[in-house]
Image (cartoon, rainbow, N blue to C red):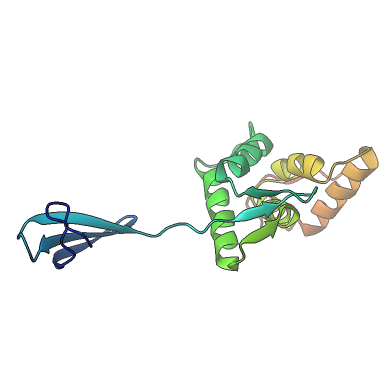
Length: 162
């Protein structure tokens, strides 16, 4: 670590503290005895999304949030639920350790999270993601969703018309 005062590369750590996003270190230059502070932060891994048409695009959490917000619009969800889903998906992607992820995989992850969070948001997202061409496609997706539904799930139930 170069001293900002004399550019010497010899310094010692006087104090070290954890911060919310890294480590703060107080250093003292061996050469000029001046003190300075450095911060160590984890650099996020660059993730790239492979789009359906083969293009590569850097993963953008804001784009993920926009899609989730559209699907969850006007739904009775807890504050921060959408952001929590986006955080979980991003963490899962990073844990995979792959530099490139197909967009279809991210879409499937969103579908799984929305199915647990809110059925209507799930159907809204599915209608765009799965590109329903007619009412039969929508009905099939609802039928599939109904097969997942269990009475213990803490969300509004879907009406079943027999």
